[in-house]
Image 1: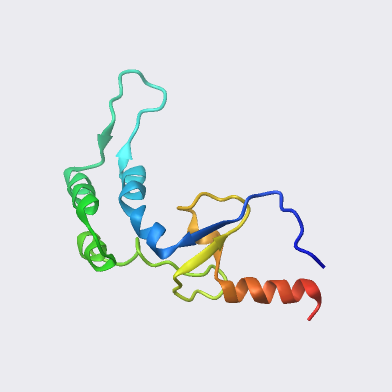
Image 2: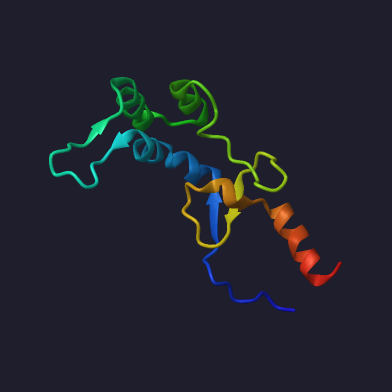
Length: 119
């Protein structure tokens, strides 16, 4: 049994890539972009969020990121199935890389493959 073609695109998300994207993901979450009103202007939700973003741009390590944010919720990469912290995930169905809640570790992917093969 070969690996079938998939409808969505699978992607590899490494811890390094995940950490590099924290500042961008922070901005995507806390920077308001007006949608329908020409009178609206883009802005940060508050000054603290902007200051955190500026510091995240300078951060070099996971520890620095955690200290800037105040917790590890933005650096904790874990498998959706077994909930283990991992260094890499496979994202299924072409989900965006910041939607890591649909990512699976190699061990869980291997278990799923065994299920498909009936073992």
